Image (cartoon, rainbow, N blue to C red; front, top):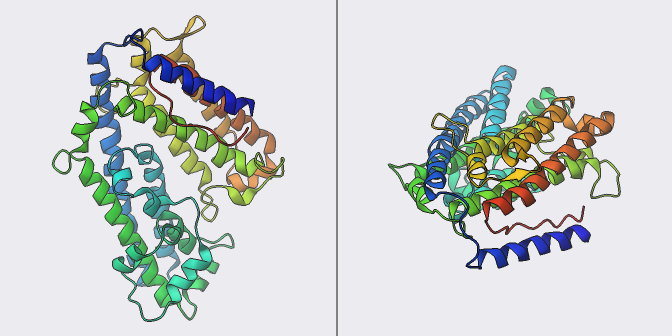
Length: 371
């Protein structure tokens, strides 16, 4: 409750500050424009390009496997392609402002809740052709990367997967797998085309939405970053640790539980946060850290940007100390997972309070987990 109250007070203070004439812009507008140009061109656009490439590779791999459902090597290749596609989406998912939201693509790509019984019913439904149009007609819980993972992996091993495809509806299962992958590829191509300069060119819109208001690129991106760091803390680590269940561990709540790729995907989410903060890419590397430095933001005697970077390093060190898979580590290495959770929580505070305040943008994200 205290945390929620403090969050409300922070938001209220920011609203007052942002509406005041005594709230001068702490940053040279040219520096912020350069940051948006670099992050948009060298961080965001490559992320969506990589997602399209990996989604295409997944379609090719699943098509090859669907044509030879007893082939263990082709199954393994499809599984590796899934991990690569999921990892690239985790990197790109931070940038959900713009086309991803306006085209309602996020839920069709990686919806957090999957209806496994519903998937089985969708596969065995009579009188339908399993193709892209059929997948489009289905709800978010029946498609996307989690649904593909469910079909390609089993906690009982690959023999169980091959056994599932060898069953009475194995052929339709293969068709559903192919259609899911093709649909995912369509989503990846769509969002990339919307961002590309020779497509919808949302990149131009992103670069030109300067300022610090709620509709500015910096304002929206900063809030997406806060949202993601909360997701890492509360959903990727906290929920499996039992933070929502009076301390009772719930290993089944890990992300990507069938593939055991939880830590790989978590690291991808952390990496995209850090790269956006530092502006890491092929360009001038101007990131949000430079905006903070321009504003003279400090934490004690230390530059705030350096403190946040050090906290990223601390988080990565604790996560690297966790043995794979995360579902096993939840109960077998509880102390190590808890230590990672604590470091992410410190990062969340630095970004939610210190970073947001010094950027002078409005915090619209609110935490409702009560922790």
